[in-house]
Length: 222
Ligand SMILES: Cc1ncc(COP(=O)(O)OP(=O)(O)O)c(N)n1
Ligand SMILES: Cc1nc(C(=O)O)sc1CCOP(=O)(O)O
Ligand SMILES: [Mg+2]
Image (cartoon, rainbow, N blue to C red; front, side, top):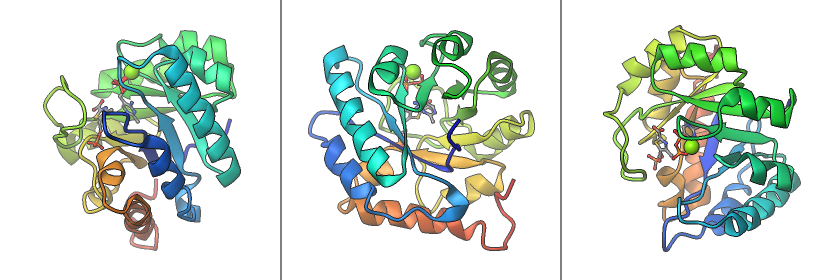
């Protein structure tokens, strides 16, 4: 199984966005050792067809392979298999983690959304590789989410599991160190990079803020 990196960049496929341009820009930013590889999650809007999802994922896998990034596909196990992605991210409306594990095998990275300690325990038993935990902060990127849980909610999940916890929802470079200090292993972002005037600079700032948590200050170093 590839290592699970601490910075997850999720594609933004809302109308008017250019996910591949953002990804190309992001992949120009050098990875820093304490963060592991950049994790790229191909997430498409619900109205995207299988063919559209496949084509975006195929392009993303190729770009990631050339840059040492690890590419995951959100929701669609079939698309992940079809493009040779390293794994998937699954939530409550998706295939069960144990089914995806059976289909993808022991070497796949499988992320599971957990909204509390109980979900974290279930995901571990089901064979998840990491947890997506949120929304850490309010976000306008996705509708229909429960109230944000804040660093303390992230801490409660992190304390209940040995799986790496990836905090998601309203994550910015300024907020990332606090989430690591709360026990998160890493963070996932959409808007902090996609909506930035300069996505590469925005990703570089996230890398810098996250890396500084590992410079001896001790925060987030679990
Ligand atoms: C890293 C990470 N965490 C959580 C999610 C959310 O997944 P899910 O609950 O299945 O919702 P959708 O993203 O499918 O709308 C995620 N994608 N990534
Ligand atoms: C896709 C997604 N899932 C979430 C969850 O809490 O499950 S929050 C989210 C969107 C995150 O976007 P941004 O970084 O722009 O806030
Ligand atoms: Mg999902």
